[in-house]
Length: 347
Image: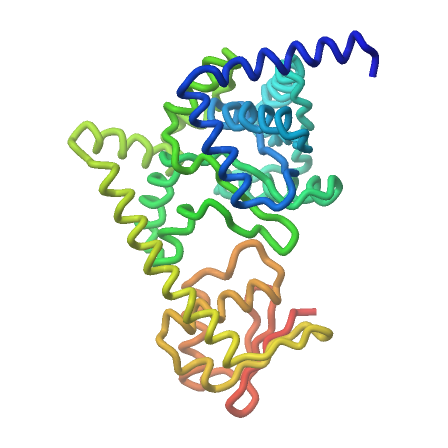
């Protein structure tokens, strides 16, 4: 690199680091730095950049970390192409971030777009695009900018869906597995959106607002407005967070027994990639059996999401009653032999 380019880059880096003199931003960065030290063995990760204030705040903290630690950080933005303006906005975002020495790669969602369940399908497509890019770049960790406001919204959405304990607290984890090769980390999950707005306003002085965030036809936006209304009526979010934390503790206890059930009452044959489940596998409490089976189906079927709870419950009822001895679910075949079951991948 030419001396002139090195000098310009150094000036940009110094300007970015100057914001760490702000006591509030300095504290946010310290928490971010501690998060990385606790969760990553190697300082190498990628960042999902939507262009909103939360993801831009994450981009800034990540850039500071890369400067101070000489770490490799990749930045990805997904152009969903769901709106006519999206490609223009993606290119503009890339151009603006370049001024801060943040090289953002645009990943494009090509092909036919859905007409219903748009946000859910877009989320799956987004993670799949990022996963494939992470494979190319040999990166195992993707940082996303979920914050505590997202946690509350997700909890209410899952509550209204009738989700079980696991579903209710799934968002409360700072680290989850997408699959064996990619981990999703939420380093900002303890912060409120207004904290991240503050960082972005101080550093970048720009942000991109997705019009869908104001579309009341989307369930998430309805829930967001509901929470804001409840806050004005006296909803104590700290108590809501305490409830979620208590449920998370209970969920950890259940997971302990689920792992024991899989370890003690099933056997995995790695070469042929199938499980044999003993009769004891199914005599545990319902939640233990349900989760154990769900985890195995997800592993064998190589799916990001486990099968719907309703589908698993119906399957268990049919097998218990003796109505069926063989079934297909989530890309897997589950077959009964005497008192044992075999689960293998559907061909």
